[in-house]
Length: 265
Ligand SMILES: [Zn+2]
Image 1 (cartoon, rainbow, N blue to C red):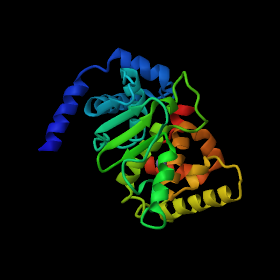
Image 2 (cartoon, helix red, strand yellow; image 1 turned 120 degrees about the vertical axis):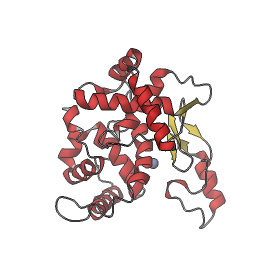
Image 3 (spheres, rainbow, N blue to C red; image 1 turned 30 degrees about the horizontal axis):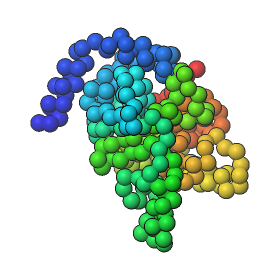
């Protein structure tokens, strides 16, 4: 019943034209839109339209969540599911937008692979409270938090290959896809998860030895963080990833069912 109502709502929204101001924000602020092939672009607009309408948006610390803020965040979020036929990210229900990085204890104990059940967890909580956060993804409650000052736009330069929206929504996708990882096969016949674990081990070795790598050192934090950091690079610098980490590039292409090279070069 719920699925049917949702489908009807989607159809109603999709019958409305994509607002010209949204189109302008998309073209002006999101570089992936510059060379997106027309057919994918149409699909992308649909996803953005539904995501913007279906999600509750809230600005924190007096941030005014304008249509432009919504469009840019929705565009990056839905870029991740462009390769999927029927995935609208509807499990994400709330997006909170902070203007700048924020400090404070995270919403729930046990985030980011930290095991608070061992050792001096009070101290760990204190440390966590002092960290600056750029975003969070809470799949259970369907909440994603994004720091707007870290989102790449035409007016703002962030470190190459990074994108906090792609990162946080990759956490959501990780949860959606986790059942697929162990069963999928790569083109070489080995399991997808095994090949991915090998790439992660290489990242950890490179980080331990202080070697420069394509991805930020944070990728060595855990396999899930590796997936999210690699996702940022896959959609932001696909050409570079294809050259420097061809296996990782192929694995992500298989996972996201799309080739970002088709619109980046
Ligand atoms: Zn993360």
